[in-house]
Every structure is written in C-alpha cells, then in structure tokens.
Length: 276
Image (tube, rainbow, N blue to C red; front, side, top):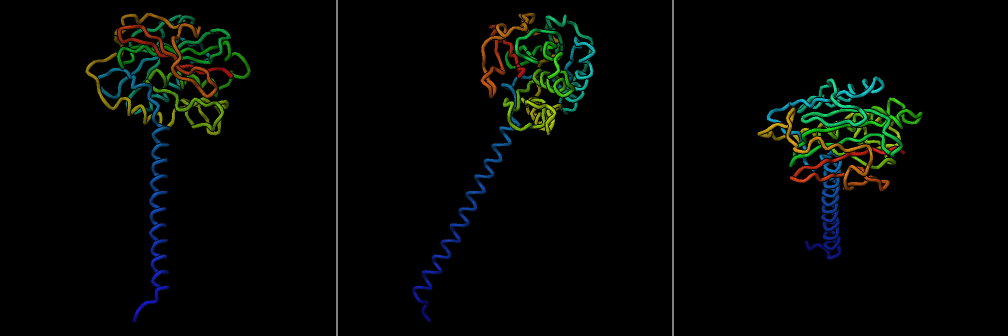
C-alpha cells in the first residue's frame, strides 16, 4: 500500500524538527560547557606572570618578619596560618629585621610592617623583588593612618588587607579588582564590604589551587634565605612616585599594580589596595 504524499511530507517534517532540536541541544551544551570552562579559568587563573619563589622541594617555607605592633600581631599570625594550609608551602612568623617606617627588605624572606604612612590613599601595599621569574624578597605594609579611623579599624578590614598582601608575596595576583560586585569569598578580592556575605577574610579554594599551579614544577636553585638580587636594598617608599609605572588598574581606574625596572632582568612589583 502506498503512503500518501501528505503523510510522507509530514514524516519528513517531523524528522527534520527532531534533527534540528538535537542539533540545537548539542550547540547549547557546547556553548554552556565552554562558558563554564572559561569561567573556571578566569576565576582561578590569578598568578602574576608566573613569578614564584625558587626552591628545590615542596612544601617549602616562606619566612615572615614580624615588624608590626600588638594591634596587628593576631592578624599576621592568622594570615600566616591560612596560607600555610596550602599543600605546597608553609609560612612562619619570626622576629623582623626592619624599621617599620622604612620597611627595608631582607633577601630570601618577607618583612611585614605597620606605621602611619600618611594620607596617601592606600590601605596596604605588597612589594616583591623579581630576578627573572623568581621572587627574591618581599615587603608588606599596612597603613595605620587609615586603620586608626573608625571605618577601617575593624577585624574584617584588618584581616582582608593583611591576608591579601601576604598572598601577593607568594606570587598571587588579585582574583577580582571590582569593589562593587559580589564578594568571591577570598581575601584576594577587592570589596566595599569585607564582612560579606560571603566574607573576604581568608584564602579560598581557588587561591590554594592557583598556588599548586604556580609551584607545580621544581627549580634547581633556591631564593629562600638567599641573597640573589644585586640591588636588593633598593626600597620602595610609601609614596606612589617610588613604585614605577602603572601596569594594571582596578574598576575605579586606579592603579592596582606598579612595576619598577631595576635593570639586569630585575624589577619590583607593588600591589595596592586603596582606601575608599
């Protein structure tokens, strides 16, 4: 028995719709999957230029020199404990070797300082000295000119800034530099409200994952506890004019990272979080 032309046409039309629907589902799935993959990469990829401490084994230890007063001691020790949760590194807090006002670096370690650095606009800065791709020393400064005011003299602001600046000395960039969007739940995120929710007081999984990526390889030398940088006592001051050129800006158009070229493949990177 022959099938009427109308039935044949209808069957062909239905098959076409089914094929079209399957194709559409596949395309949407690929787009969503691709977008999701991109979101993961963008969210977790916050190494700064692959800069890292040279070392021959994992885990390794970064020493944090304590040049802060009693108002900051607990925040320094909490930040150290938080970053030590990384599977690739530990941090230890020991006696500092710097005048807090000058916060002079010492090769192979990080000096952490607090002082009333003035109404210069910044809450905290972290500087890392680079030789090639290797971090050779670092400093963290928190500005009591602002932290002595009611707005910033809170556990949340102190936790965020101390945690974030120490994270920079380990090789991490900011995860996000927009003050106004939703918190990411990490101290490597700019925010108007560190208390959240979610709170931006500690590292998150993406920070620890990124550290694993940065330190996945081993080096044949170490810069930990070593004097490597020839002009290592070049000190970046509290004044922005000593930080070099702007290389990255936040959502407000203010510079979040500066680079100062010292020559011979050596440079200083300075990360900034600004007061609002």
